[in-house]
Image (cartoon, rainbow, N blue to C red):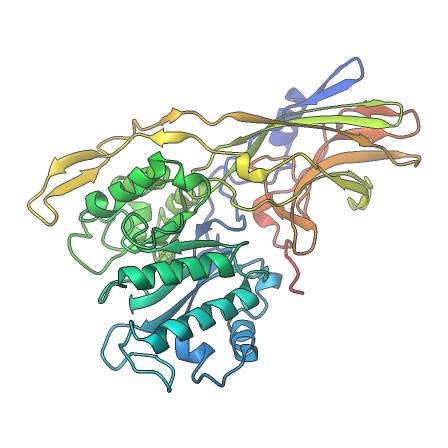
Amino acid sequence: MKRLSYRRPINSIATCFLLAFMAPTLLAQEVVYRPVAYPGALRNPLKGFTSGSEWQTLQHTYIRWNELENHESDGIDRIMAVSNRKWEDFEKKNIKAIPRVYLHWEKEDQKFWPSDMTAGEYTSPQFERRLRRLIKRLGQCWNNDPRVAFVELGIFGKWGEQHSPSPTPRMQRIAADAFQKAFPDKLVSVRHPWSEFQSQPFGAYWDSWAHIQQMWPHGNEIAKLNQNGRWKHAYIGGEVAYNWGDYENQPGSSPTDSVVDPIHRNHVINSIRWLHCTQLKWIAKYAPDIPGANAGAEEVQKALGYRFVIDEARFSVTSNQLDFSVKVRNDGSAPFYYAWPLEVSLLDPDTKKPVWKQVFTNVDLRSWLPGDQWTAPTWMPSDDWPGIAGTWESKASRWKIQPKKVPVTQTFSLPAMEGSYTLAIAILDPANGEPAVRFANTNYWVGGRYPLGTIDLDDRKAKPLASNTPFDDPHDDHSLHYAQP
């Protein structure tokens, strides 16, 4: 597979010269280090192309209700067995699931009600009771399962897309409140949050993302929700559709067309920025052997979700204390939606393993926000439904509110040890307390930590990294994983 032209080993001669030129400066006892930004996309958790791509860390999982429960006598162990089978080895691959339970796929013979319920009946007292019970059990199984990233409410209508038929207002309220109660620690999304399930502030899954005929009735409705800050606490995602209407106009005739053709790719990337999109599926099934597909897909992956860049690190040692600060910028399109820990550590310079590590107590990754108010599409009359279309006619789009550099500062007590160690930073997956999120910087070591300087515990001094310190390419590191209790 051909990589982008700029991809080269981080410890190449050219990069070492760049590192020497960008070497940290020592002012009194304080070391200031400004890492080089990483130019490529990153395979990071909880974001990006969903399923079928080299960037995958998310997997949509459609689950029939009667798989989880075919009779009221079925126990919660059946739900766990199905989950374990569908998500086998996800933790080893560093993949997390987005499950959606459904009752009806498309055709009349594709209905999957439990055997003791009436197919197609969405409003009966029995359905209401069983719905409440199932949602409660899903929460018991999935709310604390580290393999689950987000949850799509699903259930109603074809494909669980909550149309054909749509849920009644009563069922919307029952399902929304039950999901909110069952999943206090997972984000939930629904198909039409601007008009349905409004008792809870859920996110959105748009099942025809950036489709020219849904830009106004769907995209613009999500944009209205986002004006009130919905995107800051509820993830926005969905699926790019290639099977109805005027899809060849936008987003393109196929996933490959969407990422290769600059007009289509620009439309998709602008829509991602406009709506603060975290993940997309179907478009991930581009053909990587087609010229330009990998490069185009990488540009889309860079735009999806969060993208954290370390702009500056400052640290000094006084007596037995480490004074540490870092400035981080979110150059992506969406927040990181969970409060994962930020770690500082001292690494053995030979093994690169931590000999001491601490977690910041005053950091909330969810507050590291991207820019806001991306240039909206140009709206124009259309002969097709719904009579108005929207697209971006040029690449002159930008954030009206630029992303801020977020300062993080804390003082740590240093251990009573001797020797010289590498100071590093990392974002951890709380499932196993190991590094999981890659910063968009080149100062990377395999295993997920970012070296910033040296701490000499013999004379209690902070020192810069050597100018020829070799780094690894984060794209090539497939060692990151988490644990399933």
